[in-house]
Image (cartoon, rainbow, N blue to C red; front, side, top):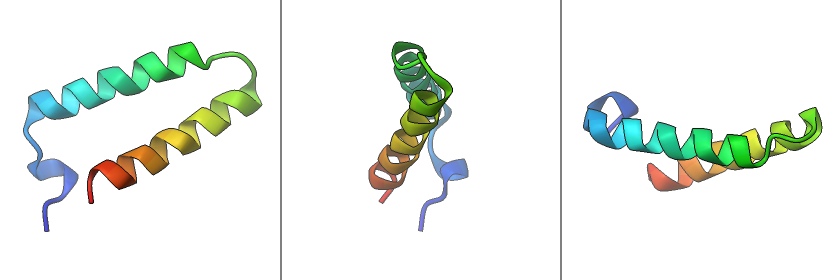
Length: 49
């Protein structure tokens, strides 16, 4: 079972960049930001399975 630590660093960096981009796109109200964060968490869970 591969954990996040076993992923190659460039891939992790790329994923972090994508997350930041999504965050900046949806940075409007605190509620929407919270929603975008939970969406990102779901995407992370899906992409690592």
